[in-house]
Image 1: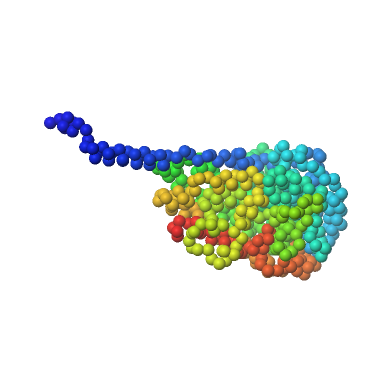
Image 2: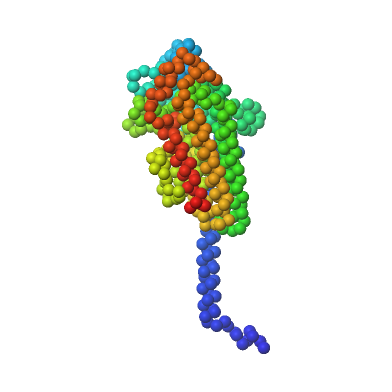
Length: 476
């Protein structure tokens, strides 16, 4: 019997069912095959494929018209002491420091406009001027005359170049780490073994080791940027091949984060906590380092009607760590309902700290982070809706929480514990003649222990750690 001839067409209900099924299938295909999200092109934001947020070459020296800036910075290295240091060694440096500051006051106010056409020259100008400002302010002996005045010969051009570059007119992480180096061997590419840090406040090996540790973490973070770039380049994340790649990359990301944690730990034998707290860290303090009630800095010749971003350099200004937080969707602002619920201490923390720290990053790096924040496809949302990605995602976030746990321990050792100590002639610390005055000056801020940017350190670090923990899917 010819069944085809007997059933020349399917029954009506079958035809309707088939059409409905095909329609649902087509809608499903349309839903999951969305157009690829706009590509995030790191090079457009001064992010290098091999060196990340580091420029691939050292910043070139400024043109001869700005030689007075370069010469003053060269002369300051190793020849100035903290103004609050009254050791015999420091007192012997004061006559030179007074002449050095007087020379800066006598300069003409140079226009940075000719430098604006070249990004690297603009970055160099910011770095040189920011270092000069910190050397100038912190070498002044303490007095009761109110705020420190930054002369217009530094303040005006620093403001001008900072507006051009789109970030804070003060010493930053970029000035101390990303731009403050030269090649050991110019014939070889940038690596941690082929870079030498040039400018040092204290002149100690401990300070150099501190910068090297930060640089090592940043360079290791280049792989994080590559993982992010691979993810944002995927046309979709619903097919088996893409899901498999994302899972592998998240597992690899956890390993990179763990290696950065080890790098952070490696600072301990190379940088003595006493030396860091008493000899190095005071140079990093910005205008608001001792809290809002203390007199800050005044930039002569600059309109101060709007508050300026004048906190000091901080690890919180690392663009790599911000990119990692954005990629993993860590909610530092407590905007999303996640568990465990924020503690009362978490709620007291400065929820705008991370966003504020972005203003201390070069403008192009800020733009990169903004672009990354605005991408439509959060990896946390994708992992939450894709069972195969939940565990790899949680593994990466857990690694980031471990990193923050270790960072808290290091901060406790180097800052919180040292804030309760008395300086002594130990590992390069100030000599005994200045102990009483220096210790009193360090304690003058009173109240909570603060970071170089003036934040309440322990509350801030715990809030960051707990916000990371709340991103974990398993507990949500």
